[in-house]
Length: 151
Image 1: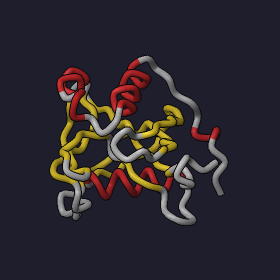
Image 2: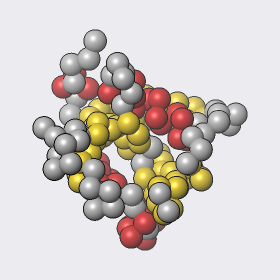
Image 3: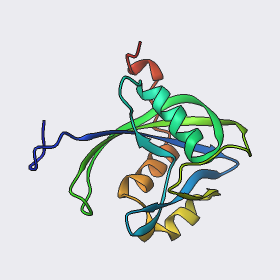
Image 4: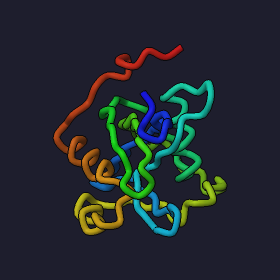
């Protein structure tokens, strides 16, 4: 369904990657702001959700990951641009890091943050979904990848 401007919601993906009590995060430029986010981005034409999640995580962090579950599907309308996002958030394990990877130009820094460090940046999170996803992950919410029917 189109929003009030006649635009369809943006379909996005994100990954929650936790290792040794720290979460893989990116510091990125978004418009005129610097924000923190999980590795995330838009699904490209004819791309599956899981392939998009793997691609976006690598392009934004240089990390190859393995998807282990679906955390949830989040609906959010940004107050900054009035765009509605449907975010498919995956849980993933970090496999290996490619130090030669060319990161997306909007990425300023990749980092591993504790939940407390993420909370300290609450006002700078890209959206409330960032913290909500961490909280859901901590509560053990997880759905099998088979919930998503992809070719």
